[in-house]
Amino acid sequence: MESALVDVSIHRTVAYRDIAAVHYDGHPYAARRAIDKLIAEQDLDERTATAAGGGSFQTLAATRKGARHARAAAERHGFDAGQHFCAGWGRPQDAAHDVAIYRAVRAARAELAAQGATLRRIRLDGELRGIVARRSEAARVRAGKLAADAERRRAASEYHLPIGPDGKVAFPDAQVEYTLTDEEGRDTFGRVNIEVTSPHYNGATVAAKAAAGFALFGSNGRAARNIVRHLVRAGKAATGPDTNARGGSNRPPPDLFEI
Image 1 (cartoon, rainbow, N blue to C red):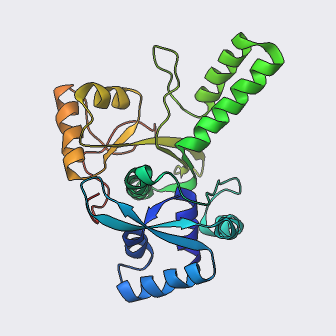
Image 2 (cartoon, rainbow, N blue to C red):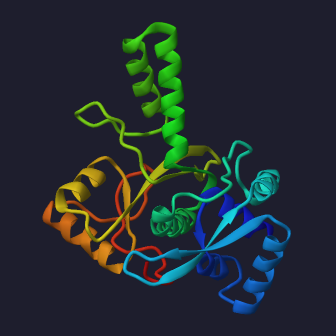
């Protein structure tokens, strides 16, 4: 149960069915019993969300108590001590997208694990935006606008966040930090920036996200095919995450259900 609580708290909003599949092998009775226990202990809340195409699905979020328990358990589950944990619900209209981010991160983690990489930390876009904003604002208060701009660029560079021609920082939906150990025992640190696309992304947007070095994952099968179509037209490869945190994915995260 602890690993499921950690997973939910890291990602803010997660579909019940995803947690059942990942942590309880899709076994409905075991999943329901374990999750109900976490709800009874006031570590998790459950809520019905509305799917973009109609219908509904069950989602989970950690309570403040649950986030504290998850933080205490982080290192036991392979996360760095600085891993951020979320409590409470995001905006109802974002639920489907939040659920898709979780599935994209799980897919990226599986691809990285297949390469022998070790997961260290997961950051959502809100955490990344906060880091850059706080550093930029502190510089502005200390030394003015030019210093703020320089610090914003410095922070973006440190966190592998691309800066567009317009000077704006491009933030992914999530970022996965990992280490990869070579044959001589040396560790290489890396990050993968993950972007979940919808079927409505146009060619220019898909190409821009890929050019920024984001690993692209479709929110469903249609969105994944859309990525491939646009990248093929643009003459770009559609590959999975690599150790340079570049590329995209030509398949959706595990398509447990359409949202």
